[in-house]
Image (cartoon, rainbow, N blue to C red; front, side):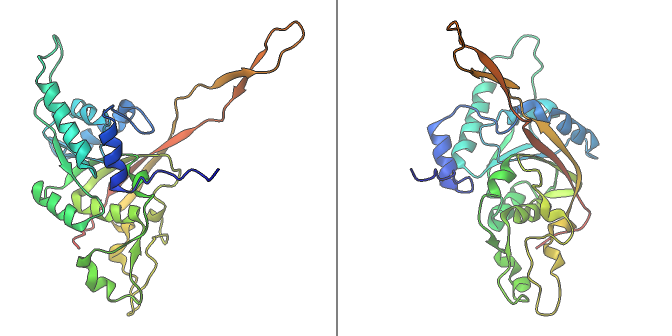
Length: 288
């Protein structure tokens, strides 16, 4: 039997098909409230009265509505995704929920969230999104395994707007998709803003370590093209393990001993973990 081909997590067709065939909410890696403490701390640290939150790759996660509860308002939350299918679903679900009479004794969250189709690796899409949000930078980026999906894609060439930079290099400049994501998010995040990421990888942001950028070409003039290094715009503030909630043991048949009674014995599994990352936007300007 040929090996099973892994899902094309970086392809739009995969996500459109997935969300078209099921509307059941789904949360990757951890539950929607697993980020509560990280999100609340970031909201409190914001210098603005109302923290402006960008939820990337929102999918059908219940985290979208949870963010509104934590922020106390939904107006400053932008839910974005690669797939128009799930963005339309999310908007429709929120409208349907708002049409219901309020629950007795339940404090309602004001406003409506923003739902926008956004290709995080497209300069054109990022530029249009900045215009839509009036170029006001975000205080908080929330990313639950979106970086994982994006990292599955191939290396990408620099946007056309960076042609002047590319022309200084002996070879076309390619970036790992996750590093290009970091550069694009730097355009959307204000200095001091935070990027909270939940990932299955123990070293998801390796390129932030000095000298490990995926972009290795040097310019013909000997320059190192430092303006393209994501480590100029982001620093890793905190990393922590999140233990996966699984049954610590399971019983399996151990054979039939004398007397005909089936014996069962526990089989212990090693600890499984995901990782939370907090990245902080530096004060270095980035305007490609």
